Image (cartoon, rainbow, N blue to C red; front, side):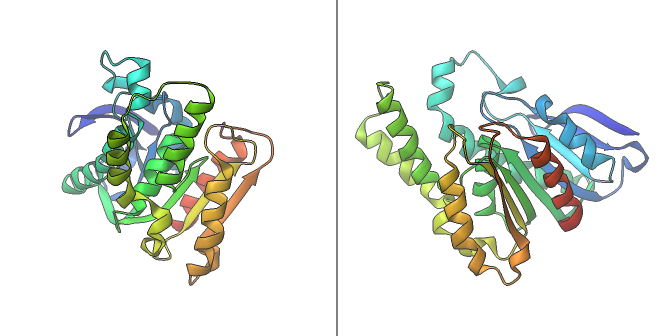
Length: 254
């Protein structure tokens, strides 16, 4: 039987999924991160599928989401997107260290995945943490700078006033640049990576992740360790096929 436990790890609210027969065992470990405006509860199907296969799975709430929501306005949360992403990358490290200290995970078998913003956090974490052994990104982009400029251009097209000065924008770019995997592709280090994206995604550009894949694949000693699945119709929504492929990927590589 799979247990779903609500707890807090180093002040991060999470849902913790595991096989109750293996509650105290060191298990292969997965973190799955939700998208922007979503919350940890929305990915329980993913956690359940892997927990019943013997994995320990954590679904965390990101900053300004779920149980970490305060009185922040919708606009302020939107303009805090990159703050949330950077904090999310740090949260990955916090969660892995905490559960390793509790003796609950195999530190040699750590996987990471996420949808949209969660996938963007996953890409950033790959640029920082060699302990991530395999990852799956769903409708995300590794190009932090390119996506930030794309967001700004979209806001201009919608005639939305930018709440930043040019100096503030420059500071944001300088902060996110070290996490931009498109300029740090060698940090992939042949780690198994599956990317899924819909060609008709209007929220996160398909072209950015696909171009990254085309450039990254020749760097892999084992080309089968990096795969890209294109979707024709889903838009900015994870299909059941994508979810099933993600589960299969972790069972194979973790």
